[in-house]
Image 1 (cartoon, rainbow, N blue to C red):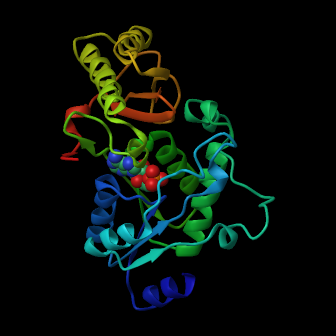
Image 2: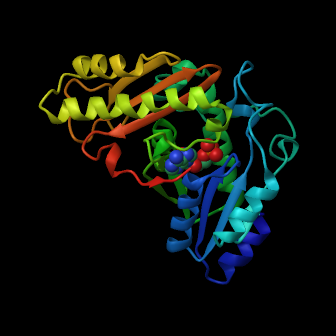
Length: 280
Ligand code: AMP
């Protein structure tokens, strides 16, 4: 991988990189299209990273379909699909890992201890291996995108990070590889996540800036049959809780639908309706 990148760069080509865990959907494909627009060569990695899964999480059953992923990547003009084995990425248990401190211990980090150490460690390794000029991430994983941007800034990685809006289905459900776990009833319940975000956003737009009130309104909508809310919070761009909601505040949430854990978020000033939608 590194030799390929070095050769491309020696020819003066800018490299764009989209890290994924595969089972590609339209959300991933938009990231690839953006990388294609901004760079001369596009690399996509497909790696279900064991380091970011908790012992009771879905690492072994995470959906995988490499032939289909390779075909989709090719159709979207990807030049290189990097599919390392876990034994290549982690020939030994890594002693040194990347930690973001307290900002990684809230929200997703609180629900999934160690998750962001796993994420940042693998992203750091992938950025070193692929050595891109540009990395493209999705806002769907808001805390992840924020922590990756800060890692790159704080640790002087020579790469620009671009974050794209969440791609949604027509009813508002954010695309996710994990949506494939949902049965038809659960899929219908799952619309509660984006509905709750819309409620927060509309309540804010009607003049309410108290995060406790916004949180309560959102929770009322999230708490529907079949949906078990985990958290709903209002944070700023640095993941800190806000005392008053502003257009830059982000409503972030997680909920369980049966055994499936889903997350979503909205930037209040942008709104769910501003996100791109696709037919499933
Ligand atoms: P994953 O394969 O789930 O690890 O995601 C790989 C990249 O795709 C991450 O940067 C995600 O934030 C991004 N992504 C996942 N779902 C979406 C979506 N619905 N819209 C935009 N980006 C997404």
